Image (cartoon, rainbow, N blue to C red):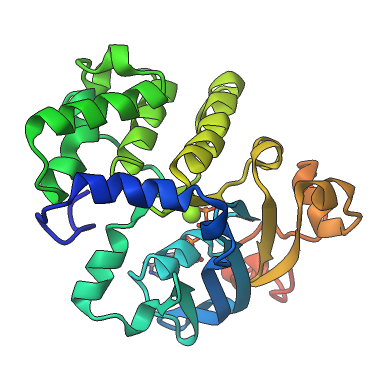
Length: 298
Ligand SMILES: Nc1ncnc2c1ncn2[C@@H]1O[C@H](COP(=O)(O)OP(=O)(O)OP(=O)(O)O)[C@@H](O)[C@H]1O
Ligand SMILES: [Mg+2]
């Protein structure tokens, strides 16, 4: 993706496969957490969004971050990816503090991360094949014949090798999301971040995408973070869940813990109830006051 990498660099293919195999090994899993978010606060200008977040993402696991719209999930992914700096605390990825990296080290780190952006679209003027091959052409010195084989392997993994010549306008929404997944994992990232991967999909396509997220993580020996509103879909595929509200983590646990939770916040979220502790309104002045009515009390 433009602006998400360091420019052309020659990769030793043997080394590449060696890394992927190592990342799948038990020894790699024993190395502990890939991502550690320690007491992180962040504000856009004066608007505090995160207020002391603590999370760990162990190597090899798929972890979900859930919370109401606007609670700061995308902001947290940007902090993990190093495009924002915390106002307090630190984010460590593979042991390195993200906001202490030099520009060059940051690019190097980002080349090991795959990001499926919220509303991230495919390049409309490129074929399915070229969309997936794009990063390999930009960031590796691999010969075109090898890029072709690797691209076909990624498309095969998402079941769309046969659609390689189609343009994005010829794909259904679910197919386009699968191509975006293949593009996200094109460089075999150690960390894959998905921002709302299920949005706008029918239930069957959601299941397909969910299974792919899990399978790609396990086959590549990666570690994944899935930001989503879709509780039911993510409970099926993740190892652990963090619930955020009002800038802090309010609940965390395994899918089993979350299903059993009696906490009103979790119950409201899991069962999609309108009434509960989570407010519908973005904070603002009271309506009557703003409309110039009466005493200004809500
Ligand atoms: N670039 C920005 N400048 C200023 N404020 C921002 C910016 N991006 C996000 N915000 C604000 O920060 C808060 C958190 O936004 P964020 O996009 O992280 O939420 P989110 O949890 O991802 O929401 P959603 O589920 O709707 O995607 C919101 O109140 C939003 O208005
Ligand atoms: Mg978001």
